[in-house]
Image (cartoon, rainbow, N blue to C red; front, side, top):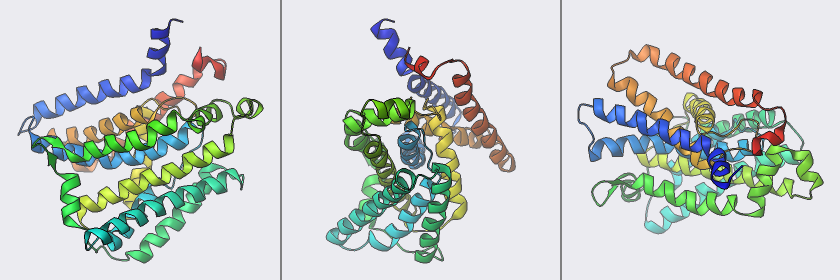
Length: 326
């Protein structure tokens, strides 16, 4: 296979997710009463970025052939924590942001340690830790409340140069600071190898445990960034169980829409981001076309089922796991 064909096949899922998002967003803006304006783009970006951060967190774990059902609860926990700590003077706000990110990193590290060293199935381990994280969030915020540094919140959710959503710029910065170094490192390559065939990776001397532990830890960190942005958007913290579950399920849909294989070893965080943006645009389209709100969860559930089914269908077409890279 020629180099360009190999690269095209390697990034097929990401390119497809980008195409789906562009088409859906074009339909959305062309039918929006206000059209394509800076306010419309900013609102869509702010909603999409929340799911994008959680989808990034999910993608890192899925690449290793795992799954993290606690990302939504980590997202909720850090939102509640941020509503306590990201307030006050610039120094106090900086300290609060660092603590919130550290807690997210710790949550991911706990997941990784249980899965890797406790040898529990990821789905079982993360359901248990997710319940614990939600319990802590509920202790912090039994009722919605709190606050946030409004200057920082407005700066990160507003517009740069009058038309560029600051949230998208932050998303790009996180990709450059977290995903790019990880994906190009030894541990990033080891994470892909573990997702493709853990036995073969182990026999090849790949540092599987450290790679998976780093993937889970970074997953918690990214979910915490999402929790911070939720606080920036809402100016409050809330231990919402339904919200945590919804973001967990939607992150799986976004990952699959973005071309990341649920069986591991294939895809990228970039695809998951555009999968998240595309999935969010579905909700916007339902609003624009005045779809009955009572039917919207059903429609989104169908999209989730189709997305997961498409991801599984691709595996039926290969006879050997090595065919992914043929």
